[in-house]
Amino acid sequence: MEPVPHGSAPRTYLTLRQINWRAVLGLFFALTTCLFFYRQLDYVANGEHRPPLLTLVEEGVGCLAGILVFPLIYLTATRFPLPSPRWRRNVLAHLVAVCSISLLHTTLIAILRTLLFPVFGFDNRYGFLPWRYPMEFAHLFIFYWLGIGLIYLFHEIRFTREHELRQARLETSLAEAQLRNLRLQLEPHFLFNALNAISAAIYENPRVADEMIGRLSELLRQLLKQDARQEVTLAREIELLQLYTHIMEARLESRLTFSVDIEEKACEVLVPQLILQPLVENAIRHGMNLVSMRFDISVVGRVEDSGLRLTVRDHGPGLPGRLPPPERLTHGIGLHNTAERLERLYGQRQSVRIENADGGGTIVELRVPLR
Image (tube, rainbow, N blue to C red; front, top):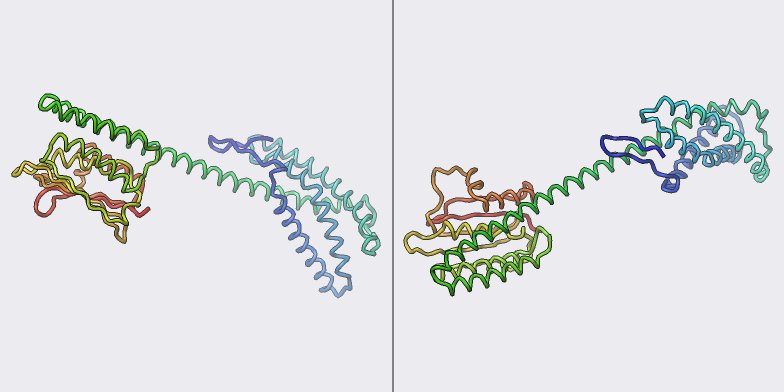
């Protein structure tokens, strides 16, 4: 079976076993019905009296003969495809095939009429057989090329759908690979910053550094348990986030206050894994209150009509006034990575906003669809 090139993807026709024979028989039945009504109404219009059963048997015999030769037509169409660089050679093959199949089709009609007409009580008046061959050839020639066209049309639709499906799978695979890459960027970035904090604590307070290492080990153990899914429930995301804040609490002790306020119905909403950790990390790095020298970080989650709203707030010095809003999301790996992950996962159904909060500090707001 000759494959047909289409771009970079080879195309292969279905075999006879793969054909939907119910659809094929349905087409033959519909064609026979149309021809029966056409011929019978033609007799009625001309004032001729003709038994409808006789017309039905005649058209039925032609249909049955057509069904018997259809596999030959299909094999010719698929082994000598006209949409091919060798179409000139294949046209000659089709001309030979239509002549041969016409002879066989007319012979089958003659045999079937001899067998079936007596069963229904009709005389077999098929006329002089040698003249029937050129007469039936004219009919079969038309139906042959009509059938060939339908076969190619069917496969062209199938090839197009398969091509679109392959494209969709490739785009999905690419998007998943990009999302995995974005997520993998987060873990070394977080680990590097955590190790820096531990390194600083070693010289100041070895006991605290040892405690931080233990808590970091627990967080890494939990991360390794996670599968490759991009999304987890918000409740699970908060558990991982609290493991991270425990590390920083050991470093900052009483200077860090971390609060979480999540609605109960928001706990089962799916969110991207590790979506809050870089935001809280940024809040700790840049959100120290210059008056009290404390870090007050809060995370709030609310379910709204438009989706899930998550906010991370600190009480630090806030954003520089000269920094325009579009550049705020590209200021640092954490924010940039967060915004890009949300866009790839949810498209236009998400938003990220960062601005100075009322009363001081910075607030980062994420909105994601309810899933």
